[in-house]
Image (tube, rainbow, N blue to C red; front, side, top):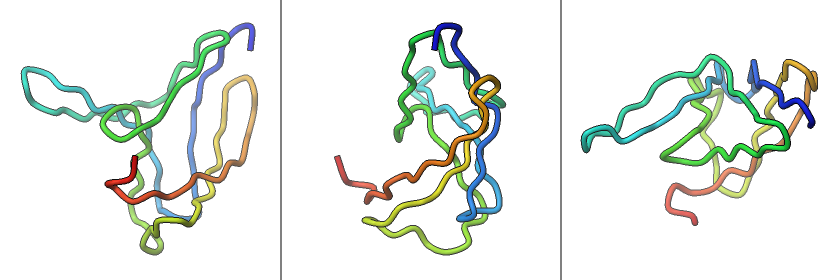
Length: 94
């Protein structure tokens, strides 16, 4: 949108908790840190991907299986709540 937004919460019935994380390479070492929220700039697009910004799932209720989907409930500061389904891919998938 015009003024940007902020992703403030993620939940899924597939895990006890879901947190935003960021992975960066610093001095040749991979470092991961949790993010409380995620800023989305005006007219911007944020891509979540392995090795960068991603959602860390803790306490899975069942194993994730490639080819299935995982429901996510997202809460944005301005846009409100949105439900999405995320495709589960194998770790070696492009």
